[in-house]
Length: 632
Image (spheres, rainbow, N blue to C red):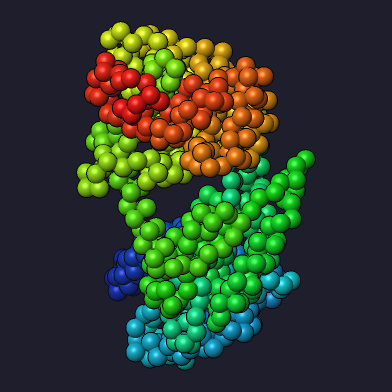
């Protein structure tokens, strides 16, 4: 029986005794009364203690719930949590860290944490413990971030970030360390992928330009320290666009991947290969001590490209051109070296492609001039600096002008009037020739319309088409639109093409020219006799006219061979029902010799030099006596 029940029994007994005491015994009655009061106080205290006990039980229950909640958070937290002593021996470990290490939770207790670190990081771990020990002595709390790796029991490592703190205040030797360990393996993998995307080409896996800028600066610094040399080589695939156009970009992409692999196989360990963009690659040859070693590597690359590239059902053949700049011979500046290598590359292309070329100062100056012109050409159209000149084609029998050939000129603000030879190649290479060609067609038709309205209704307009224009899928549609807009008779329009442009993509060229011929436009083969396959083209293409090249006219009077070629060409044209025009007629003596072969339509400076549009009508109205009789 507990004390409170005993008090209650005594209290009841005093109540009974009070009723039985003799009034003559007042002292005993008073004592019983005092006892009764004490017992009442004790009983009240008992009730108050009972209430407090109930409250305490409720608090204990809440604490138990909170303790379980804390334990669940600690034990089932997604991040690992450890408690160690000041020497790094594990006292408590949650489930997450046990799973991270691949061991049972209960097996971690009593194990040194250092056992689960890679050997390379153990020295850093002991240094951290020493730092934490000093912090505990100084009675300062510390949270120290640290990235390392943990070893899994079954092998492999996990990247982790660790936060360490100390429970204070406590003596240094008795302090415990708390370790919050987060798995950052996926984060590290994502960072690696981001770096890969930022500094590597997605298609080939090679480093990209962003990587190359940093690498080259470091490579030059190392070369300078070692007193050696390095070479920067720019490589560009020849006629790569033709593969994309004919087989599609999927084939081009696969070709670039195979090219990257072959280049890697050719380079030495330590050399850096980068995809610069498009079909351009750049690589650095370290320890390039001699010109012969550089040439040997370039020869090996060209030889590797001689083998076909298998792309599905196709065996593709493609060559490359390479430009080389050497540090420190050509420059000690990274940007300048890259520019010089690029200039040397274009020089290699000018030499016929499938070759390599070292940078040379005089050629570099020419390349710089070309670059400047290319920049200015982009603004020339906006500034209305292009204009057309016209040179007549004359029937020497009647003296009548049969056609005017439109010739593009550039009125350069500083260099004056430039002929096409100065800039046409740049327009062709950068693709502007299509846009400028459209302008030539529109401007030429406007001028020809003025002639016709002035009474010269039968004069044709002859316009040159470049190889890139012939490959443009919108050419025929654009020509139709120009003719319809100007209400221009297509039979009074003539397109001149060269043999070289016609054989680049023969099937596409034939289709395009056939569509133009069906509109009523005359198709003329320019520079006939100087190309690669003249007779084949004459047979295949829908031609109405041949223009004999000026090279057969220059020494006509003293060259029986040239006379024989012209006679044979005339016979061929008659058999194929083709018109013949001979260009480059510059002397009076050439005219009658050409007439002997039956030629009557001629063009050249002897009749008239190319003239501005404003001069054409005056020339037509003041036609002199036919020039074979007397000079104009």
